[in-house]
Length: 381
Image (tube, rainbow, N blue to C red; front, side):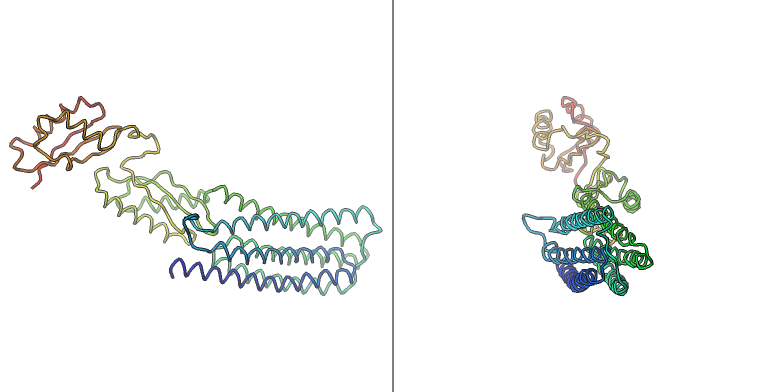
């Protein structure tokens, strides 16, 4: 399945889940609020508001699925996955605001006992039905979330689980009120509010961490590094970084290879590392691998060295007597340990003396350039 097909499947699964959740939560919110008023249970009404918040988040999931799974474009080269993250922050804020409202109302009733409600037995049946419905919705949503690697669906699934737990609290509180403890219903509403607020905070904070590019867990990063170090041709690994985009990670890393490798071989090793990282973990969508001839995480020793055009211009001047022996376009430069090391390729018929002697003479002449390191001469057959 290619990326476009995967995005379409993810979009379809998220939308279908949000529609199922919306239907269930609309039914529950209406039933809880209506029977909470009829059955005189403040806790059940609070639980109904919780289900209404669930309905709001189902709408968020549907909207996020519509926009976050769009393919990358010129303005969004990394795709639109963080739209889902932003919606998850919004979901968390909705839950926190809902919790604050319920806490304030419950506190007011506890401070004014004459406003306390007296629940009836019908509330127990509605709470029991809510527990079964939300627990079933949780398992359905969390299953889809895991297949799609969706943080928003995961947040919504736990929102459904919190609704099931809050209904259990309602069940306990109403049972206590029916046994002659009228305060338990209001306390149950407070407990529901605290659970809603806790889940809202956890989801919002997790998504905020993603928006500020918090990396993967240290243990996971260490496992990624170990995978890279086992690959043939890799001499070292440094500057391994990660960031989360929606439900997946983007990795970038520097690898050290033999400093004399060809560009194409270095690229081959880097591409192998990239594919190995993607295959090693379901949550890694892509990796950017930078090839280094030496560990540049300690110091950028070659940062101030001149580029090829300037180097060749200086070498033409110091090698003026021998410039006819080789073609400057076949001079190979190696930027290592703060110096430019030079390999010169000469045609066999152009050089009568030994290559060691020519190498020494060119090296002595190049001493006039303080940034030049070793000079080696090779004969081209």
